[in-house]
Length: 394
Image (tube, rainbow, N blue to C red; front, side, top):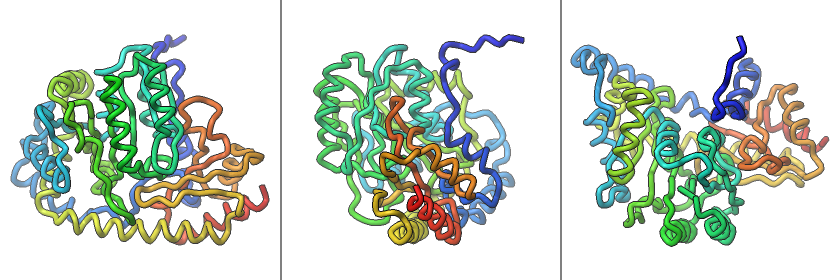
């Protein structure tokens, strides 16, 4: 059979990260290519107890169809949780739960973008979002990342040159893959430019709770008096990615269309998981829980960076993130980055090549992304020793 693939999907390539993870399922591989929470971070006992109680006392609610907007009690819990430090709701903003923040990004793009419309992104950026934008045949424009966020001069230039821009996509906190945090000044400037040029902002914040050092920075959504920011949040990094609980906060007219789009996609997200998430949020001291997670990751990132300082060639530059799960390495320009990544896998270490996160082909050809949350402490030490030796040889 000669299968006719739609134009939308024909040119779309699989996520390089997912393909690497499949190729490196061997438990002997040190997984610097992953982005999973640490094994010791999961509240497994608490989730087991909550699940048992739900299935004993409310089995029909957990197993029956529900509403697309999401489990009502969870939506209340999310609002209380998300707004405990800052206000994310303005005017007619409302909330929908979704199957991870990834679905929120996809549904929002589906509602806002026609083929040929422009999406402006940080460059490099998260491959899952980039593939979503590509699947809707958008024109992607990448703005180089600096240590404190997007290059504002180039952002305004892109807005002037692309009048069909529908939104600016940003990950302001501990960006994936760079690890950079956008400064307050740049967040304010990005918002001001979006307002000036009449475009929306999609603020993706899956890592915001995972801050290990420095001071918290207000979200762009907290500044949104104009109804131009869509905020995507997730519990994947602080409770469980397997539960697939994310949410979108957006102005009601847009959210109404996102609800219709979700009805056509999956009717509603897993209600059992939403009930578990709701009860976990209500019964747990979330600030203490998050502090425990941050203790774990603070130790891990400190271990990785100290090992890199000891073993890596001095010609390798790497970021020192204040939070999140990733750091970014720039190898010398003469290094064959794909050769480096392939040799790393042969040496039982998996890393992600920087080109996987490039908005346009041909950039970030001398970079790699490393994850410190997934590997064990022993794996971090051993893996960095291996990569360090390779940086010396290359």
